[in-house]
Length: 396
Ligand code: NIG
Ligand code: FE
Image (cartoon, rainbow, N blue to C red):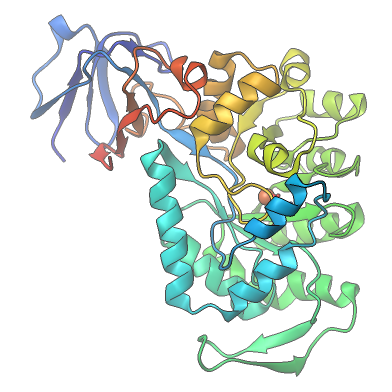
């Protein structure tokens, strides 16, 4: 691959020691320094005085789904509470959808995210909830990202049937398989995990009232780890559930949501390598209280920001939106929010090759139509992302 010299950088944020106003990349960052001493490169890109920063690492999304829940959103804005029950609506629509319709929707959302600066996107299953439908969700996700997550334990599906068949057109779903939630947990830990593990890197559980309790989540995550997956968890979104403590107990890479945290939760996180991944789009779209990120940062907890892009609780693919809301509502400084959306996301995925622009990092970066990365929070809602490079290739 050829080399690209990026010049005329207004402000360069690397989250590494390297400083300068110019850089040379191939698929990796090769050189950073003063433009006046830049070595020769094959091509030149003029940043026009715009800020350069690492591409966003969105470590939490559910973009393999079909259907629309705008009416549910409108009802919430008129006073209805969010309970997670709408997940069932999306499961029904997702099972009905053809492979190609599901894949097309997911890749449209992936492109939408990339055009707003996301260069790494984690994608979960969780709207199939049968062996076949979870496996196909993960097959689709793995065509879009290496960061795929098996979330068969999203909720216990209503029908508790086994869907058999390998493609959408030859399946039947009339064979009863499980009678109760304990059998569903067994299915998730057994046949479903076996079919899904080859397409997944991570395992996740929605550990919450109305979904799975702490003991069930422990069983499921432990089975996933045994199958070679790494654990992460939906924790304390709606209640003080004990899920954060479980995340620390199991050394989950991340505890996601963290909307409700006790002091004991905060100190458990602070003494662990589990990142607290905050999802401001979710509190925004469910009218929940925002967690206090300042409390986490001051206690020494690693914090990430992600979109939680899904049709129910947070239908945004925009990391700049999440940064702006986190600054305004979660008491992060703009710098902290930008770090949480890049380096923080990388830590939540246990990656050290992304989320920063130190020498040797993957050349995932954003050029803004603004002189400083602070403008991401200062100018909310304005499309400031001018260019996006993924592994050194222009994707916008
Ligand atoms: O992260 N909390 C569980 N899962 C998703 C929402 C799912 C839905 O409402 O469709 C979340 O918010
Ligand atoms: Fe989620």
